[in-house]
Image 1 (tube, one colour):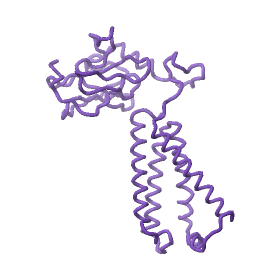
Image 2: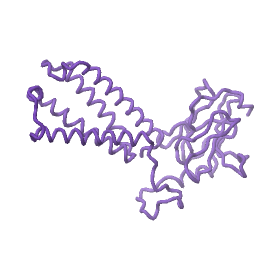
Image 3: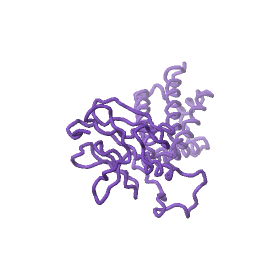
Image 4: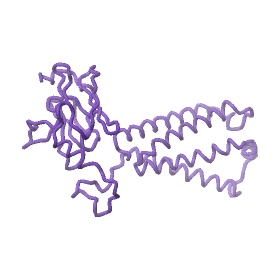
Length: 282
């Protein structure tokens, strides 16, 4: 197999656990450590010199669970980089090597996937039957709750608070509790049907996306991208297509602020997309 530790490993790789298909934690420097599944109770690990393996008395097992080698001398074993339906995409960990391979998850590959790995994958596939509270918990390998990343809390709380504040201000304004200025009356009078559609749709999309993200649902990805698309369309309508120049359009920095807000929205979309790719959203 060769001395694989002398080769430069790709920075930032995250081999997926072949059971849970979540990124393993570890370092590319194999002289220090190996990659390990982050799920409690899962004892699967990966090194390019050992492939996927289990520990035996604190040492890597002599019998790896896979034998998916890169065809280039000394590159060692490949790792599962991502999942594509019922197939796993294997990649080489060496910097500059573009060799990839697609293998079925539940059948033996040409290099001979062991029964142990196949049975483990099948055993971890959730059934269609919904679990009850008695089925959940650390005793049967099913976590009771998912840990939400810190940014999920920040994004969800921010969008929810923004929605509540905007709704409250709109209610107080249109109910007459907060007096309207002549400028505000003129602006509201200039709004068209399309303006009202954007005004209603954007807040509803934002709070829906925030709730879906807080619940760690994969639908949050689509809602945030849709929110960004609606925001771009609203910006184009407000600043480029409308023939009347409103008070809002004439405010200094209005367009710059809108572009800045869309930049933040784009960053959030990319972040949520990465959460889905890592399996955090389900």
